[in-house]
Length: 472
Image 1 (tube, rainbow, N blue to C red):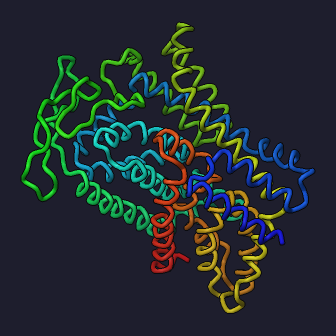
Image 2 (image 1 turned 90 degrees about the vertical axis):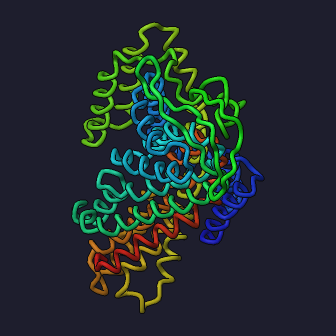
């Protein structure tokens, strides 16, 4: 009964948010509360919620202060050179922009933190997508899949969990999987190319020229001709302006009502004299995070406080910066605490355990010698419908024991278990995905409808490559 109710609760949640019948926050809170009553444990709902909130509170704190920290770094201009480099590569070609999104997300993912990756990627690419009226779900989908592949780094989380759960070395899991993961990342880049061609066909190509302004800074201006792919006609006028200016270049929309301004090279929050301080602070912060010198929430709390104090020593300026990023902080932290209700009920009622036992128990005996393949296939839906902790510490050991009985090693099981991460990064139970959709102003249901099929394909490419190369 608990198995059926568990699957029904997840299915109800996904259907309602994809059909936009409920907001994600409302669905994350009300649906599990209702199913908790159905299970007959409504009296324990408070305990389940408190347990869930307690478990996710450090994550919520990390996201809150990470948003403030990276928001301040964006304000002071730390990432402007990255943005300009991406812009120079992308120009105004939708194909290059989508491929650039995948490359940027993959590179930034080396820090091992999804929230950081999404904040930097969206901050850099959002102005281009908005100006050229490109599909924002393409941006969120490509970024999520690229980060999902890179999330398998030993310090990224899943690999470390698999190593801990099966008592093996993380490097023994990750290093042999590099060829398969490389194929997964290559597939994401090819997919980005295909999606970019589709966007180019829909929007055409607008030529942008790079010019030097008086301050010696490279910015982009509209340059007249905007020809659609395969079309020799000319669209629009040719009154080019600087990004963030008051006019429009050929094919560029007016400033939108949501306050989109792009990265203004003259914004008053820039701190060019403190550039190297901010760069070193960020490198030190990421190094401390990778080396685990302090808990990540503590690191970002200290980093945000230090960044605000040094860059904005006057109290009104500090308050203004915090207020500027308050909407993102509230949206993301609110979503995390709402997700705590969902995970709390799912785990507290025992639904997760029953679902896992049912799935493992229905594996045919003849599949025993192929338990690595079974593990890889199961990792795709299971890491989407439950947390990584639930899968790696609850389900994976059971799968490994079943594999041992048929001579399948723990290392093969562990390697196969990380194949589902490209889909996992878009799970409603992953707090970082709310940073992605929140900053990109994309409905979670729209992102889910777009990304699931492509993320499943990416996961299957990783798993198929691992089988082809004899890794699992």
